[in-house]
Length: 312
Image: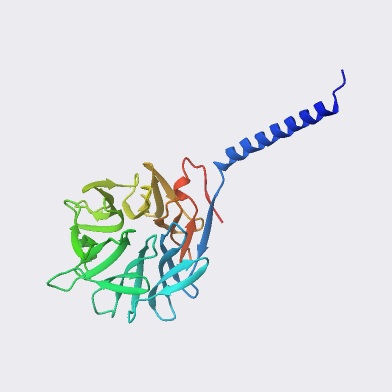
């Protein structure tokens, strides 16, 4: 019996629908293996650019060094445009973190012979702070939560490795020290319950830590000789860097308990720093010519089981 025109049209629609479904399934299968987006950037005229943090909206903050004036400066990178961040009168400005509201924390030197001071830059105003001490100490600001709580390190100037961590909240300082540690270095606070950082153990090794609800948990990249944690996002993904047994430095992300090593192609050293809620990573890497560059790596926390790789 001959197929009618209507039957032929119905059969064709079914065939096209089946092809579309197959293409969709194929696309889903390949989506698990696509390479993640990667971009490198340098502050104009700099020989050193480091991305330290990224906001949920994609604003990146960090630091750079320009040989022309021999000084370190902070920066904000928004929609492809760099803006310098310098504490007025400072000879050196470091940016540690930027929160979702655009508040920046860091530290600066008013002169190279004076102690380091912490600062918060919010609403166009710099507010400086120093850990209270009978003797001059250096105060480094590293991390700031969306609520404005700050963590960092206070130390005898020139002896950072024996420094103590602090939480600066509501105008009050609270010391943070990993029990038995030689030195404790908090780098980021995500909320009132979770702080991450690094400590120098009595074994002479740098270990990462998570302080959650007052309890410290040690975090070490497997088979590493050094683990340094630099950041955490609201989902609990952690970023940092580690040294492998051969002495080389690599970036890493820990997500859902799984470690993901990050190596930028062609780099002699890689470091992970800031993570946004989507798992995008920013950091720095060093090329064979000795220059340090900032980078953005899309959804680094999604890279599991070798299902994605870094590509230009």
